Image (cartoon, rainbow, N blue to C red; front, side, top):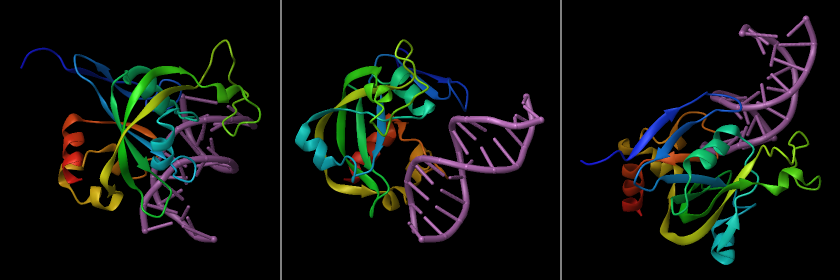
Amino acid sequence: MAGIIAELVVVERHGENAGTVWRRGSRMSYWLMKSEPTVFSIDDLARVRVTPWEGVRNYQARNFMRDGMRKGDLAFLYHSSCEVPGIMGVMEIGREAYPDPSQFDPGSPYFDPASRPDDPRWLMVDVRYRRRLPRAITLAELRTHRELAALALLRRGNRLSIMPVTGKQWQFILALA
DNA sequence: GCCAACGTTGGC
DNA sequence: GCCAACGTTGGC
């Protein structure tokens, strides 16, 4: 096989620089992004088509966006904190990481008084609707497949709202649908 | 609504 | 730098 596809870089586990980052080689990367459907659902995305992914306030998730996500990458939209959590559809990264303005908005639930406009702490990307999966792939179903044992989503106590998915995992999940 | 798991904060 | 307290996430 020719060429380096990706370089895995593990940095600190907690705090400002937390994250495990796939720096890109020649190929796209795959992601999973959680959203509570009462806040923003696949239906909302299908309607608006493109949206800024505001409100990420976790360093590890931020670092995945900043260091790993590139325009054209694909991501699963996952519904969390709802009756049937699961993967609902596919979206595309339409714009790479840039400052999330809600961190400076005192009226926003995502306001962060400690973030300075000249040194923004929180970033977001834009995502674009690609398609809905033919059926939802539920969390319970994902757990039944050995092939997905390493999926970050399935690790005990997982709370990351943005996480990488390997190419193999991506293809396997798509084949389930 | 409960609660386990986890990240962050802040006192020392 | 440690660690207890606290707040949040998210499945069930």
